[in-house]
Length: 57
Image (cartoon, rainbow, N blue to C red):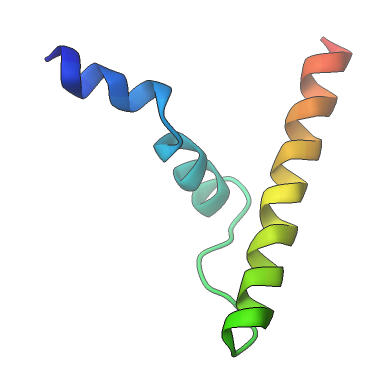
């Protein structure tokens, strides 16, 4: 039970949030470099959104 509870402290919830809340379920581009860039853009958007929420509240 304790080991399973550690999953809440890892990065796993972020993937679910990016997929569900932000609607990022599939990439639009092809090729590893382009997909990597698209993923970086999605994670940057998540981080900016989170920073805004933390500083505004």
